[in-house]
Length: 376
Image 1 (cartoon, rainbow, N blue to C red):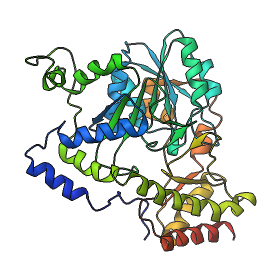
Image 2: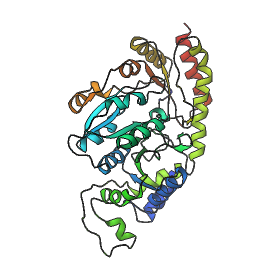
Image 3: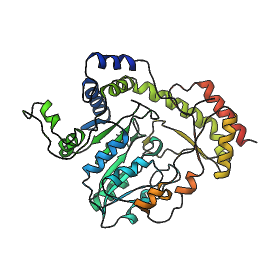
Image 4: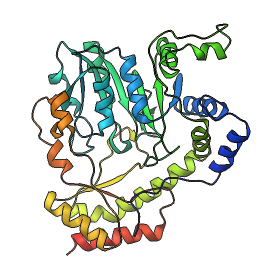
């Protein structure tokens, strides 16, 4: 059976983890954490990057830094993972879901303005499959209405929008390094901060409400509890594992793109024949091959397709159940406007196996299984 996902591993990770252990520094903010922060900052052009325990906690920090008050509203897509929503719910906000674009499955930027009320404080742009939202429009709307923009770039490490790295365009950006992502530390993430005025507050949040980071830089002679916060620092062993993968970032990216391009070229004739739909990459967007999805005709065909692939030795999966239809979504949010595409398109979408090290032989097996189903 061809797995849907295998966590990335390049071969140097365990050596770095061993170094962390031998250095007698396995809690957060050691040498490997600092190296990862610096690498991410320099590679993507972010003035401040902080590794976190997950993409979820990076989003939680972003939500707290937006200074949301009870009753404030956050606009976001319904087609996303629960973490995108939960972070803002924990900060006390009300969720306002907006429909998606069927070509990218990203939030429909043309529907955002109609969802804005006098309670709106934040727009959250989730970059699905590592393909950018239409950020120029989103940033223009936010500027006109005085709103913060949080980029959920959990899937977008190494992707760009008009030359800018995803996660660096909005006020705050959030990466994930979960085992299902292009680069992994098992569980982990990162918060990217655009405006330096939030740097100290973010450090305090991340260090359990203390000014410990200033103490270690020699800026204060002792550290103390100064505000609320939590423990958002990942283990140094996790950071050491990630460091090995960041050293091979381009190698991993090129490998995944090769698989994505093989799928696209091989399945393009099926799309041209009207048998299925393939992902669209808008002009100005460079993606990172985080996933390769296809769309079937409807839910019934999708169910049969996934079973056919399984019978052919290929594990493929669907994706999110729209949040606005989930119990928590009904409790904490509302849908703005009409659900034209969110539910319909999510019912059609299937993700094919895609991971670092997927062999050409396995890709061909996947492609042949897909063709066998649609060419009947």
